[in-house]
Image (cartoon, rainbow, N blue to C red; front, side, top):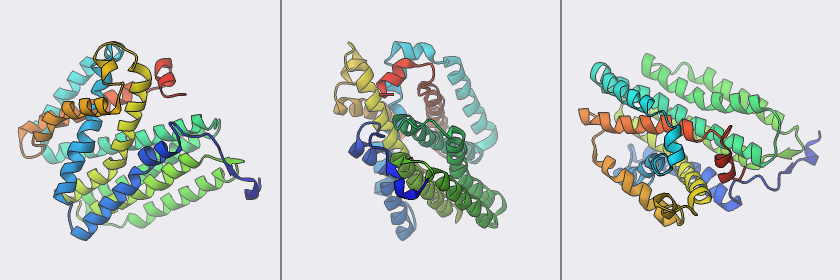
Length: 319
């Protein structure tokens, strides 16, 4: 089909155009500004890291509790034995593997958690746009594109050499060209999906390239964590509020109260997260607590956002 006939799908948004652009895609811009500030400053600005921890990271992790603790149906669907087993594994990994080993495991797991969320948004945007094609292409392009910079970072960490940069970057560029060529063949472009991928894939490369300059430095890894987490946290908080308000706002009890107004939801997430912000997350066995809480978030998040077989979730997301 000629590119002259291409047009954007008129109704592909999850909430609406402005909300989606700011919350689901715009976080990449804020993360890029943070990365630039770190590059200029030579390290992560302390005040910005503190703000990220209290205002975004903590509330996004603990907003999961607004569903799994306050919704009886969600509680019944959670395998709490598995969560308890996870806690034991975290303890054992810290005791026998040490904090460096545990941090690397959580870095990989956390990155997988983040790019799985990006893939989830890709598929939601596909569904909203009525795009009934190329599910495998979207899945493997998204996963591969987010996985490549992580592979590069780990190769530098393990070998001290950057020799894999050119091959991996070449694979990423060729893959993006092939993917875009497929998209241009269609009559309508899925603008939100392409904006999401076009924003966050280069951002992830920038974050991992920055950290790979000194992959064993906690300071550089901290920058990597913040840069990849800013947009993820914004996406998660907005989608959780969108879901909770649609699903629980008419309920009685605590789930109904905190789901009626945005400020109540944020206040609940902030209060739930606040104590954990003061627990050391390295060089102390107290790190078992935050590692376990974050790991539980990863596990629970993978469970509660599965749309297939969950009509209540699909309805709350407007799908």
